[in-house]
Amino acid sequence: MAGIYIHIPFCKSRCIYCGFYSTTLLERRDPYIESLCREMELRSEVWSPRSFSTVYLGGGTPSQLTLSQLEKLFRHLLYIYKVEENAEVTIECNPDDITQEFADGLRALPVNRVSMGVQTFNDTRLRFLCRRHTSSQVTTAVKRLREAGIDNLSIDLMFGFPNETLADWEEDLSKAVALQVEHLSAYSLMYEEGTPLYNIIRCRSKDEMEKEEELSVQMYDMLIDKLEAAGYEHYEISNFAKSDPRRCFRSRHNGSYWQGIPYLGLGAAAHSYDINTRQWNVSDIQQYMDGILRGEVPAEKEVLTDELRYNDTVTTVLRTRKGIPLDILSGKYQTYLLRQARKHIDQGLLAIDDGRIALTRKGLFVSDSIMSDLMYV
Image (tube, rainbow, N blue to C red; front, side):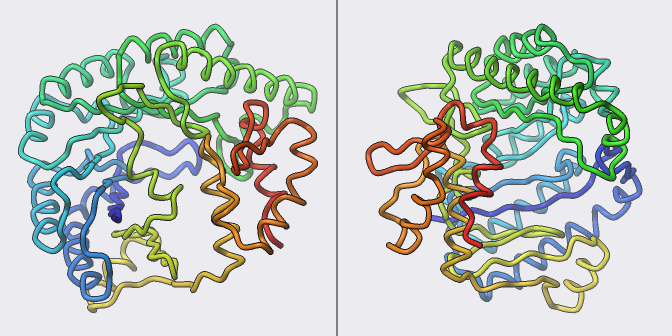
């Protein structure tokens, strides 16, 4: 079992994080698709396994590709590789890209899951994020996707906007639940130093920042309570799947990252993992296409040592609610993990049960600092 991730770096929005407009990249969609198809051929000569149980088109915004470009991409993919009959095939989309034509066109593709970047149902906050869509377009997009036969739909939400209240967030959650989507991911808005977004809040006092962090914790607690009450399983720090005894709606592709399953990354900036090594393609699109044109994949690779494997386990497996099975670690790293975890166990942030160490409800919101403490350095 393995997965394929295909990176489509095109969009028409200004990124609130880096301030970069990428509309000019749309002119390079055709040559980029050609490069992806060629990389499939190049990687097929050295990649094993050749059979895939998940395919994920992410970005960027894959829905900025035309239907003919998507058809070409999938046609080549299915010619080069074996994609299992019951594979999960996901495409990320923006709500405003889901025109009637696009939705209808999905019927001709092997796509059976759509992940849509909703972020918020408040139009003022959408404008703050420089998103192209409006809240009303989300409802329309969901309706069109359902009519097109998509019965596995995921949406992304954000919380922790400047001046957002707990009541605002509750309204977003209520609207999300009303859509009856099968999967939901939610993330706290991050303020990365050096970005335009960070400049908006950098003058705030320490007291203001502490109050905002406390509010974010309350929002995260509300997220868990509201979605679990609505019948969603909280199976990973940021991810919730509709509980259904007949079918599992957890993201199978993302699960491969958290379970150490090999995945092949295609495209600029895409990462690959084959158990023994990790590889990442160059992020510069032109440099990527130039390399592929020369018949080589411009990438860096590292061999995974026992230490790197342990650290990968901490940063991936611990994200899941089941946590890390202690018996997958050698004696050296099991001893190290338990020693580093002791203070967090004492504080009620981690717990050991049935041979697994996992984040508690209290520890979920501070998971990054816990993982940092557990890393082998």
